[in-house]
Image (cartoon, rainbow, N blue to C red; front, side, top):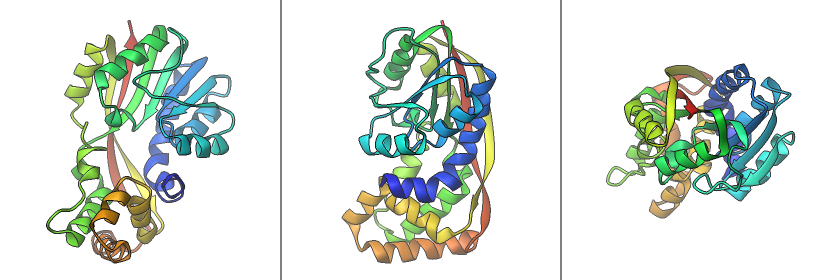
Length: 254
C-alpha cells in the first residue's frame, strides 16, 4: 500500500501541499523539527531542502511508511512513533509539523497536548488538514465511481476520515484545549495535476484503506474499471488539473 501511495498519490495530491508547508516551516527558521505522520517523506524531503540547517526527525506510526520514507528522504532521522505517546523528552523541538495526519489521531486533544509537551517555550505546531470533501475534485469523482460500483454500500473512507476534520472552528477549539494559541489559520486551494486518471484511480484503490474495503466487497478489477470510467466521464482521461482545498494552521506553545 505504501508503494502505491508514493507512486500514484503523492505527486498529484500531496506534493503541492508539501511544497507549501515546507516554505511556511522554513520562514520560522527552526533548528529542531519533528514531523508526525511523515508517510513516505513527501513533506520531509521538502523540509530538508527548504531548511537545510535544521535537524529533522521524521516519524510515522506505520513501519512500512518509515522504511520507504527513510529511503526517500535519508537526510532526516526516521523513527516509528505514535503521536499519542511520543518517545521524546519535554521541550526537545522548536517546530512540529504534520501534513494531513491530524485527522487520523484517535484523541486529537490528547495528541495536541503531547505535541505541546515536546515543544520548547514559544515552539510552533504547523499542520494542514483537508477541507470540505466537495472541494476536492479528484476525490469527489473517485467517490462517485465507488458509489456506482457499490450502490448499496459504498466505502466511505475518504469523506468520513481524511475529510472528517474539516471544520476549522473545531480544529481551533481542540488546539486551545491542548494549551496552544492559534496564530494563523488559512484556507488554501491548490491545483493537482494528474497525467493519468487511471493511475490516480489505482492510487486511491490500492494506496489507501479503501483497498481493504473494496477487497471485502467484490471483484477488484471490475471495481477499478467502473471507477476509472466514472472519473474519466467527470474529469477527462488526463492530463487533468483539478482543485483541492485544505486548511493550514500555525499554533504556538505557551
